Image (tube, rainbow, N blue to C red):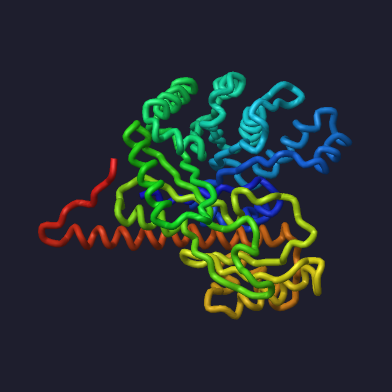
Length: 386
């Protein structure tokens, strides 16, 4: 069983603040899949004033922020939000440039190879030209297109084999991320079936290091909590599905990942009428407290009342649990307000701390059950699907 956690997170200010305020005991339990966002118009305009090579200038700044947190540690880097053949002023592809910049700063980088991008000749060549430092391996990310192709086993296998041969990668050491994506409309059993199908197919081909990612948090707060100034719980279906799969296959090497507190399709553009909210991760679910528009009464200051709801609920884990929990308590006491970036940081910090603990506790429970079953007369060993 893989006890590590693989959150898919955007390499942005809120997430960086969340990471900076985590102890090493938490950081050592997860490896982030960092999605490098496209440069915004505002960021580009600022970079043009600073450099004749604004794209490279922006990427260098982004790399330095990542290195401040993860120097000497492994990160998985994905640039799928950028056009497939986009190049910097110096002619480098975005992924190659980021890998080089991060490596020079002491970060161990595993670059993501996009299955759906592999048919681009220019993209393939850029991947082949990369040099990885010791401890890093290429990572293959399977998206919706790849999961559909999986039904055509011969074609699917040939693409994966071509990727591995092209980058001189051993299937047994290559991490494959099975990205199921937005599962808000899927029942848990269908998510589990998708995990089961992907696991059997990939292990059958020869891959051994597999991670599944998905997100059941919707792209707008209205879909999670219907009424303004109210709260509700929402099941984290991706976690229930993964736990169900592992319970049936305790020896399976399938790591867990999600999208933190964001929906995969959510926009980075802050809507003028966005509702203030707190997404508080609890076992198997989110406890979500929704306010009202930031242009309404109290604006962001309403976060203080929302924090009180969290602190006074049965779900709150006390200020000492994480930096995020500490900030929620301070907010409930009227000591801070924050903005959208602040609350991404707070929610993400608590979420990652909570999920790393949840995975560890679940694995401990499963291990105890397996050990107990093995001591019973005529006990059969746990079955690992392959």
